[in-house]
Length: 258
Length: 224
Image 1 (cartoon, rainbow over the protein chains, first blue to last red):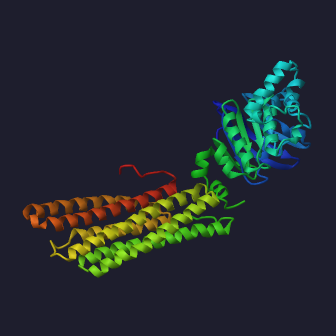
Image 2: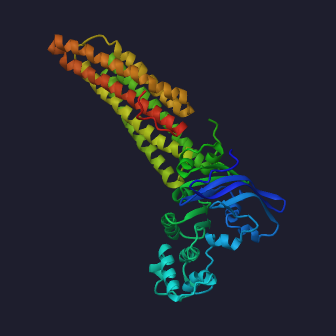
Image 3: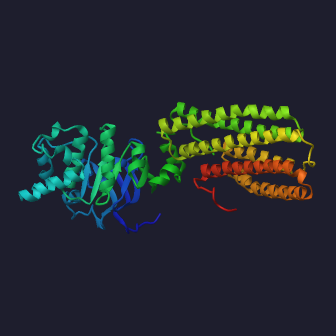
């Protein structure tokens, strides 16, 4: 394996990354590129390190005590673990959507403008336009345009999750990280989010962790299979789900171990 | 290839069941061809009618297998090896069912020919039958054992069958030119030869699918 990756066409490059929770090594020598404007799925059994890797990509693991990163993670050529880099700036560029919808206990409108306001965006017209644009992007606009001042907590789970995606988009990120974004949703809401992912990839790069193998197959262009903290196989999704290179991958996605 | 067992033993059994039934269907069609050709060579119309009747069992199995495969697709959402196995099984099933129909065609022709005097001693047809039967057998073996070498060997034999078919055509042409009264019998023998040639195509189709099953690559429309 080459030591220095060729970053062409990629937005994030992970080079020889090891990650530790205290003395426990959760990731071993991860070496992979994430293609720009593509959907990459990370799959593998529980505890394989896929969510750890996802959180590492916008320095969310910084918030957990006793963790340590070795190796380099580049975002558009910049080492995001350089001491001079402000993790808050990184998180503006690399947004995250979590497993359970977690809207703020505020109105739909204020959920979206909360972040932009913090960064100094105060013009009412700009904010209104942003709310409409992001809610349209997340295909929620038609359902909520007349109730924007209603509490976000009164929305259904699927609507809340699309609101969280709109909230993440309001910061105008380049990358969206999604940690099991549909595992708490019903099939219709899941289908809407998956449809949304497909639409968003023209403007954003999406990296998604999922336990749902069919979901990975449906929404992603590339798939990485993780096991015991290692990246076992990283390939085109079509290849992974029809003829993976490694038997270990095949065994996992056909349900032969785990 | 050594195969790890599924976490779901029920799923494992469903796949095994499809495999077993396909092997059985393969054996039935191979037998049908053997008996159809025997009925021709021995001018045995009763045997020919048995072949025609026993096609119902082949058709029944075809439907049963297709349903089993559809159920696995709908309920298990197979991926990778399992997906290739199911798509392969559906296609092999179709090929075998068609081979069964060809056996019926041959048996029907055997009944007609048994009512007329024999045009000539059969020499090439039994040779062709042997190759074709072997192709069916080996194509199924290659599927059961996921054996690339056997599968490729099946595809190579198709050529020999094509050549024999052409040879039979040429020979029968000479009969017809010499004596128009042979035309009826000669054209029927030509149809039998054509049926055997198409069976070889189906056996090759099965072998091609086995190559896909094992390698993930489609070779169906490649020239040799």
